[in-house]
Length: 66
Image (cartoon, rainbow, N blue to C red; front, side, top):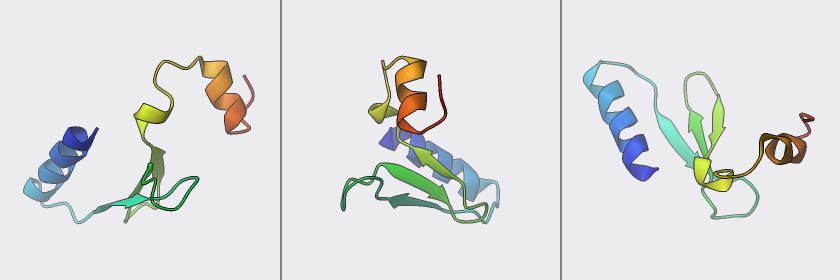
């Protein structure tokens, strides 16, 4: 996951984009499980938290239904 973020950051820098990515906490202080785009404000949960889980389980955890 860290390699993916590094590639994403390097490609943004090389293309002249002004966006930045911040690592943020999700459930507990210091877990660094969210990544936020500083321009759009969009946040992503690290895939390691949901890898291998059924869609219904993940969506229920976030209140989206199954």
